[in-house]
Length: 206
Image 1 (cartoon, rainbow, N blue to C red):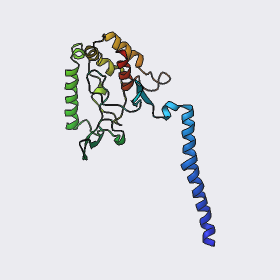
Image 2: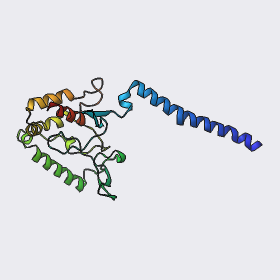
Image 3: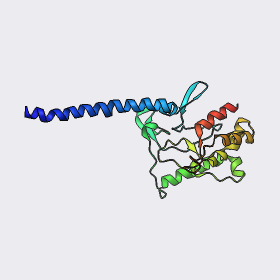
Image 4: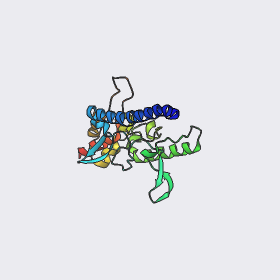
């Protein structure tokens, strides 16, 4: 009986705390967040033509020249053709990570050089006009999931987008101007553009 009297309070406390912290608290926070900020609570999902196309919080691997390109992603995952093997899988939200390559890494130097060459070939008008390639177009983020780019990185791609889509450069530039998110309270953070939102708006121009 002595042992039972000693164990009973511990078991009772364990059950009560499990219900409180493992059930009531999560349910309460979920209900409150859905009430106060339903968009964010549901994953900040974005739609286009009535279909969910992604989240504001996770980047996507846009490679077609008719779309704005985002930051590079160093995430990896199972090979779609052979699940027993893994390899590069950009913006894999289940494997958020950076490349962990330092400035003395030959692999990093080679990758950046290859990316710079590709950007120059894809954006000849910007290079001819004297644009410098923004750093965020050749570097990966720590998470590998960054959905945003700097305004400079978006403006760098204006001439290519206008050429491929047969739009005026002015209309593409004006679209970027409208899509720039300013720092919170005017000073917290940096101006940035959400690439998925920008590309959805870009499709809306046509």
